[in-house]
Image (cartoon, rainbow, N blue to C red; front, side, top):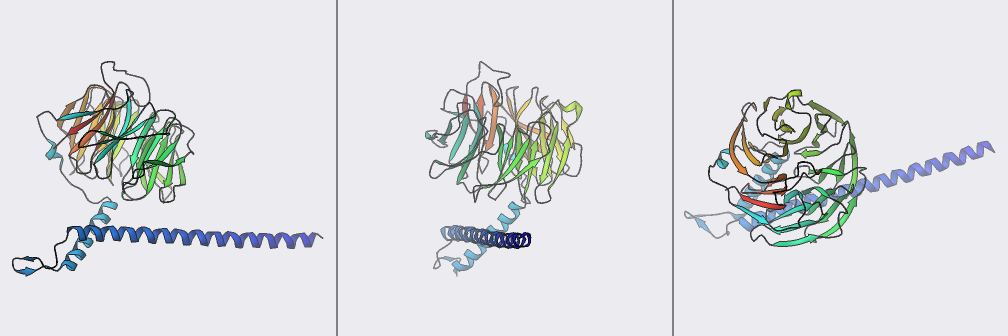
Length: 417
């Protein structure tokens, strides 16, 4: 009898293993199909771009007939090379000097709810701007006219704390004090799904450059990865000893996070399942509040004392620290992707634009100051860097400290060029 049960158990295990193998094969086939479909759509988009900009086949230039097909191939090849370099984080531009001006920058205020705005993001094409508020609202405005385009309803039940727009411009993701990550369809203006894995408020969101991978940070001390193609959970990263209040991503499967009072910035190498830990200097502040990637080998961080530090991935100490960057704690630090332009904002009422010395990464040069009354909770530039959006409020996005009663809750658009 015992032998019979053993045979039955073995048969059941074999059948279960076979079923699992079949399921695994099916999942692999489905993943391959999704990758082929994504590649097909990508190549079609390149073809459409080439067709929209090409010369007519019969057009002549200096009495020579232009081969439209050859132009298409050259345009597509150039676009592919550019995309590959951008994905790898190897396209770098020195353009900070273009922002050096002494004249006041033109500003416009966008009308929204009378609650503190906590975050701001441009659409992928730069035509509209999104903002989240402590009321739980998410609004969208037209950048040119300043008119409100849409309010995303049935979203967060508490403060919206962070947001990000996917590189393809399809998804807007928002994180809140209610511990949720909402995924919205921008074209359809509706909620697609909600990620519920975090056990604390969601404080940071970032997309991997030129991909559909999303990173989310939380006060539960974890960082989570999400597949936006499948709208599914991927992994959880552990290591911080305090609340994770900031996350940034650039290329490859890596992200940069800040652990507030554990005074560390961590670079997570997801495929290798490893992390690099960078500890802030004792004289540069009691906590690190924000950090941003400059390129694949360097990043900047800022502290609650107003100091800004530049780091290299191969050194455990900062390459340089600007101790007097601000006279109060830095609330925002934004790197214009793969350029030498760095933007910081503080409770001291100043938004400052810096030129990073990209020869040595050992100096910061102040090139412009923009005075703003209130706490700047969000800074972002549009794709071409001509406009800056600021989320300005009476208090900090994560709390009610340093309340500025003379400030107004508002979204500000600044013309930088």
